[in-house]
Length: 131
Image 1 (tube, helix red, strand yellow):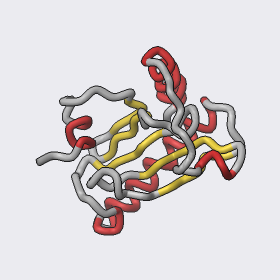
Image 2: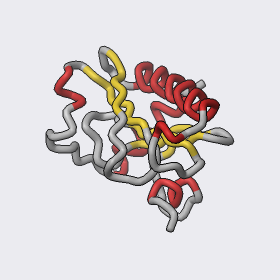
Image 3: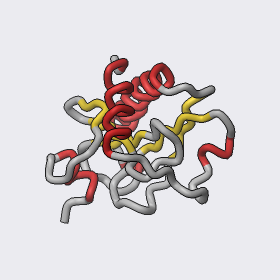
Image 4: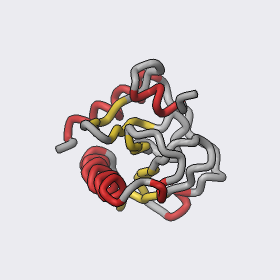
């Protein structure tokens, strides 16, 4: 059965899309640690990040870099943090989290609760500066 992320890529489940190309897809995390928390995934459904072949992992990192640059331009923050956990969804993914302090990337803290309108506005801000 396809992962929830594959179902998002296939348009079966809605998301707040930031960017995509032939191989990669970026969208807002609906349980964000911070405003502008983005997930970046390969469209190829592979569970473990380090099972990606060399070209895929390099491509994923380069695509993530472009997304992180857009997040930094659109969302007031000091830096954009990167985390790879991969236990909650069996599909390789990278978390990009706007940071103003190290505690902003603490996955044990309560997640933000945002309205659909807020998600749409945040996604639009980031996607509009994505290059």
